[in-house]
Length: 105
Ligand code: 5GP
Ligand code: ZN
Image 1 (cartoon, rainbow, N blue to C red):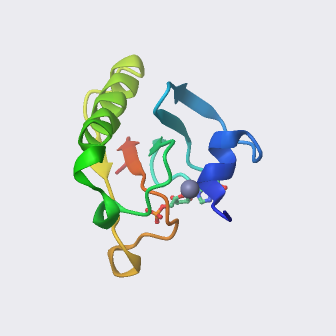
Image 2: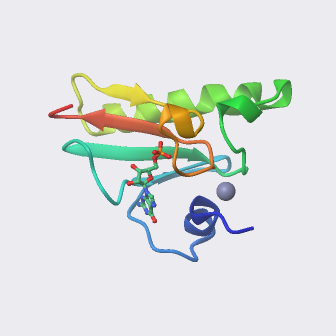
Image 3: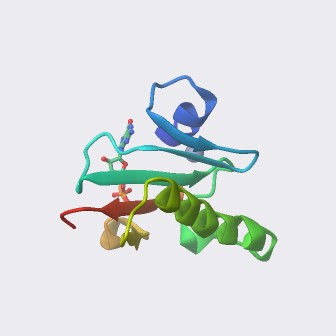
């Protein structure tokens, strides 16, 4: 599959890893839109929020908990969590991801 985020998760494409567990991978955005800009990504290739299923319920929750954990570790007072959905929603990479943004957002 020609998916840049799957390649990053597999270690085939370099990224600055911030967090990894069995289900989730997080790394710095290559083109940061804020002082802190981390992408939190499920390892499972799910195209977008539109493609989430009941079976992904725990995984979807875990995305938020991992974002919270990274924010805590980075001592972020406040932050913005963004998920773009579909081209018209600003989604350019078709692998579900949550943007964690803080500082000048
Ligand atoms: P989207 O617009 O799909 O919600 O966000 C995709 C994000 O992925 C963008 O902020 C973009 O900078 C980031 N991105 C795209 N390709 C790469 C890459 O190869 N490496 C990293 N670290 N980030 C990427
Ligand atoms: Zn993928």
